[in-house]
Length: 142
Image (cartoon, rainbow, N blue to C red; front, side):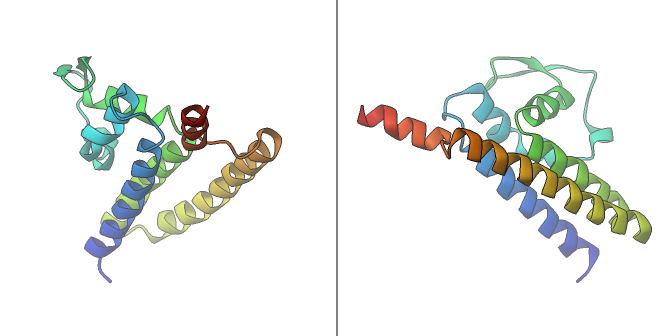
Protein backbone atom coordinates (compact mmCIF):
# COMPACT_ATOMS: atom_id res chain seq x y z
CA UNK A 1 0.00 0.00 0.00
CA UNK A 2 1.18 3.48 -0.77
CA UNK A 3 0.25 6.92 0.58
CA UNK A 4 -2.44 7.48 -2.01
CA UNK A 5 -4.35 4.32 -1.10
CA UNK A 6 -4.02 4.89 2.65
CA UNK A 7 -5.38 8.43 2.35
CA UNK A 8 -8.10 7.18 0.00
CA UNK A 9 -9.20 4.62 2.61
CA UNK A 10 -9.16 7.26 5.37
CA UNK A 11 -11.29 9.60 3.23
CA UNK A 12 -13.75 6.82 2.36
CA UNK A 13 -14.16 5.91 6.03
CA UNK A 14 -14.76 9.56 6.94
CA UNK A 15 -17.26 10.01 4.10
CA UNK A 16 -19.12 6.90 5.25
CA UNK A 17 -19.48 8.41 8.73
CA UNK A 18 -20.48 11.79 7.27
CA UNK A 19 -23.25 10.16 5.24
CA UNK A 20 -24.51 8.27 8.31
CA UNK A 21 -24.78 11.58 10.22
CA UNK A 22 -26.35 13.30 7.21
CA UNK A 23 -29.12 10.68 7.02
CA UNK A 24 -30.20 11.51 10.58
CA UNK A 25 -31.60 14.84 9.34
CA UNK A 26 -34.64 15.52 7.17
CA UNK A 27 -33.77 15.97 3.48
CA UNK A 28 -34.73 19.60 2.95
CA UNK A 29 -33.13 20.78 6.22
CA UNK A 30 -30.13 23.09 6.49
CA UNK A 31 -28.26 20.47 8.55
CA UNK A 32 -28.74 17.85 5.83
CA UNK A 33 -27.47 20.28 3.18
CA UNK A 34 -24.40 21.16 5.27
CA UNK A 35 -23.28 17.54 5.05
CA UNK A 36 -24.59 16.77 1.56
CA UNK A 37 -23.71 19.71 -0.66
CA UNK A 38 -20.35 20.68 0.77
CA UNK A 39 -18.74 17.28 1.34
CA UNK A 40 -15.50 18.25 -0.42
CA UNK A 41 -14.80 20.94 2.16
CA UNK A 42 -14.50 18.32 4.92
CA UNK A 43 -11.62 16.65 3.09
CA UNK A 44 -9.64 19.84 2.53
CA UNK A 45 -6.87 20.75 4.95
CA UNK A 46 -8.43 23.18 7.49
CA UNK A 47 -5.58 25.63 6.86
CA UNK A 48 -6.59 25.81 3.18
CA UNK A 49 -10.26 26.59 3.83
CA UNK A 50 -11.34 30.10 2.89
CA UNK A 51 -12.12 32.02 6.07
CA UNK A 52 -12.33 35.54 4.68
CA UNK A 53 -14.65 35.63 1.66
CA UNK A 54 -18.25 34.65 2.38
CA UNK A 55 -20.23 33.44 -0.62
CA UNK A 56 -23.94 33.00 -0.93
CA UNK A 57 -24.84 29.31 -0.53
CA UNK A 58 -28.13 28.63 -2.23
CA UNK A 59 -28.72 25.35 -0.35
CA UNK A 60 -28.17 27.06 3.02
CA UNK A 61 -29.95 30.29 2.01
CA UNK A 62 -27.21 32.55 3.41
CA UNK A 63 -23.65 33.73 2.89
CA UNK A 64 -20.93 31.67 4.56
CA UNK A 65 -17.24 31.04 4.21
CA UNK A 66 -15.92 27.52 3.64
CA UNK A 67 -14.52 27.40 7.18
CA UNK A 68 -17.90 28.42 8.65
CA UNK A 69 -19.65 25.61 6.79
CA UNK A 70 -17.23 22.98 8.08
CA UNK A 71 -17.27 24.26 11.67
CA UNK A 72 -21.08 24.53 11.77
CA UNK A 73 -21.49 21.01 10.42
CA UNK A 74 -18.93 19.55 12.82
CA UNK A 75 -20.70 21.18 15.78
CA UNK A 76 -23.62 18.85 15.06
CA UNK A 77 -21.62 15.70 15.80
CA UNK A 78 -18.88 15.17 18.36
CA UNK A 79 -17.85 11.90 16.72
CA UNK A 80 -17.50 13.54 13.31
CA UNK A 81 -15.49 16.41 14.82
CA UNK A 82 -13.12 13.94 16.43
CA UNK A 83 -12.80 11.98 13.19
CA UNK A 84 -12.24 15.17 11.18
CA UNK A 85 -9.39 16.27 13.44
CA UNK A 86 -7.77 12.85 13.35
CA UNK A 87 -7.97 12.36 9.59
CA UNK A 88 -6.22 15.66 8.99
CA UNK A 89 -3.49 14.82 11.49
CA UNK A 90 -3.12 11.46 9.74
CA UNK A 91 -2.99 13.16 6.34
CA UNK A 92 -0.19 15.46 7.49
CA UNK A 93 1.74 12.63 9.14
CA UNK A 94 1.50 10.47 6.01
CA UNK A 95 2.39 13.27 3.61
CA UNK A 96 5.42 14.37 5.66
CA UNK A 97 6.54 10.81 6.58
CA UNK A 98 6.16 11.53 10.30
CA UNK A 99 5.94 8.02 11.79
CA UNK A 100 5.88 9.17 15.44
CA UNK A 101 2.95 11.51 14.86
CA UNK A 102 1.16 8.81 12.91
CA UNK A 103 1.51 6.33 15.80
CA UNK A 104 0.44 8.97 18.37
CA UNK A 105 -2.61 9.92 16.31
CA UNK A 106 -3.75 6.33 15.99
CA UNK A 107 -3.35 5.70 19.74
CA UNK A 108 -5.12 8.95 20.67
CA UNK A 109 -7.95 8.26 18.24
CA UNK A 110 -8.44 4.78 19.67
CA UNK A 111 -8.68 6.14 23.24
CA UNK A 112 -10.96 9.05 22.31
CA UNK A 113 -13.27 6.86 20.27
CA UNK A 114 -13.58 4.41 23.20
CA UNK A 115 -14.60 7.31 25.47
CA UNK A 116 -17.21 8.54 23.00
CA UNK A 117 -18.53 5.00 22.55
CA UNK A 118 -18.84 4.52 26.32
CA UNK A 119 -20.68 7.84 26.68
CA UNK A 120 -23.00 6.91 23.83
CA UNK A 121 -23.72 3.51 25.40
CA UNK A 122 -24.48 5.15 28.76
CA UNK A 123 -26.87 7.62 27.14
CA UNK A 124 -28.60 4.83 25.21
CA UNK A 125 -28.94 2.77 28.39
CA UNK A 126 -30.42 5.75 30.26
CA UNK A 127 -32.73 7.11 27.53
CA UNK A 128 -33.47 4.03 25.46
CA UNK A 129 -32.42 3.25 21.92
CA UNK A 130 -34.57 5.89 20.24
CA UNK A 131 -33.12 7.40 17.11
CA UNK A 132 -34.53 9.97 14.72
CA UNK A 133 -35.61 7.19 12.35
CA UNK A 134 -37.59 5.36 15.05
CA UNK A 135 -39.13 8.67 16.14
CA UNK A 136 -40.24 9.37 12.56
CA UNK A 137 -41.72 5.88 12.22
CA UNK A 138 -43.58 6.18 15.53
CA UNK A 139 -45.05 9.56 14.52
CA UNK A 140 -46.20 8.14 11.19
CA UNK A 141 -47.90 5.19 12.91
CA UNK A 142 -49.78 7.38 15.43
